[in-house]
Amino acid sequence: MENYDIAVIGSGPGGYVAAIRSAQLGYKTVIIEKYETLGGTCTNVGCIPTKALLDSTHHYAEAHHKFNEHGIQLDKIELNFSQMYKRKSEVVDKNTSGLDFLMNKNKITRLRGTGSFINNTTIKVVHETESKEISAKNYIIATGSKPSTIPGVEIDKKRIITSTEALSLEEKPKSMIIIGGGVIGVEMAAIFNRIGTQVIILEYADHLIAAMDHELGKNLQKILRKEGVDIRLGQSVYKTESSDSAAKVFFKDKNGAENELESDYILVAVGRSPYIKGLGLENTDVQLDNRGFIKVDESNRTAIPTIYAIGDVIGGAMLAHKAEEEGVLVAETINGQRHHIHYDRIPSVVYTWPEVASVGYTEEYLKKNAIAYNVGKFPFSASARARASMDTDGFAKVLVDPKYGEVLGVHIIGARAADLISQGVIAQEYEVTAEDMFRISYAHPTYSETLKEAYLIASGQGAINI
Ligand code: FAD
Image (cartoon, rainbow, N blue to C red; front, side, top):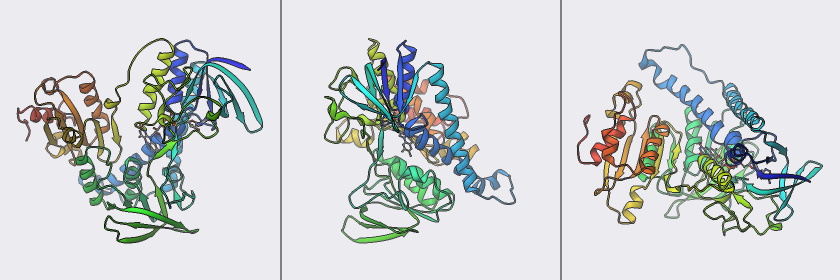
């Protein structure tokens, strides 16, 4: 039996960050991963490969639609689909080998295999025919999530696929129906629409990215429709069928009118559920909630004080940076430190173009809870930086407390919104006022000036450039 201070099960952004922080704090740490590469969903089939393809297809779309106006003339613009996917895989490989390096650098033992609890204090790690027992003073479960589906929709991984299969297609699909207009659905729609796949999104809600401030979804919807994505809202899918060469989807609108469509692929993007298969939780006293997520307290402790859980497997925002924060929190909690994650200050981002990013309260939330607020909204079309780069779609919107000027929410759709949002996170974390935010100097010309103008408007000062 091998003994460790901390055993981390799963090597996604939650697990590998937890392992590194544990090792930095001097703990003898082991990380257990059932796949050959480290990095989990995010690095292998999530954040990183999607962003690589979003970048490639963005360049392709820019070459088509903007280069001429920039005065750049190319004789022929051709897409080499397999090269685009090859580059995506190389980006993933660089990141996974970077993680190998970090494990070695921090002297973290790495074990390949499925970690499975034998009881509350011991696990076995099984890989093919080999099995090894391990005991650790503390365990951190970071086993992530897997794609969910809806009744009547069976993912066959051939014609009815998830984002995972879409990231390893061999040729460009002619058509694709995406069930779900959430973050993963719209990112996938952007990737394939830009390269000429005929894309239809079927979404049950009345908005895309419905969990975010609704104005963002409405604006994104307009932009994606203008680019050719067929978006059908208020549609309830109840059945799919597939053959060797195509797939069919059956759906109803809110009035019960039935419809069906066929395409090369149906991509199911209706959310993700916790992954606990093979973990042996039935041999422990760890509790699950009614949706199958592992129950934890505010320090991410399960019902067993020496077993912690982090990331997608405990639910909440299924985001890599949320999992990372929890990884650090748990390692530091084991170390006797106390800190706290402000879950309401975790930003959400959609990497379409323009990007969409959000932190804090939405207008819908403030209205529903009768919380007074002022709005400051500034369009990218009035930003000198956005005009220079021809990225004039979108706006920056800030929601501010009318009495004290506290920043309640920041919602951006526009160029580089993913990077701009960190400013909103700082504003909320340190409870600064809108006035603090517009009194500071913003470099000119930058996209960030849209935020300064939005804060000016929300404070009743009036914008300078509109
Ligand atoms: P995971 O990353 O899922 O890792 C869990 C790991 O545990 C896996 O490697 C799994 O093999 C391993 N494992 C499971 N069970 C066992 C076991 N018993 N023994 C050993 N190993 C085990 N989030 C963002 O913040 N930004 C994005 O841009 C973004 N884009 C995304 C795009 C897509 C297409 C998808 C699907 C997700 C995206 N996400 C994004 C979400 C993000 O990937 C997840 O929130 C994040 O990966 C969760 O991290 P985790 O550590 O909890 O689990």
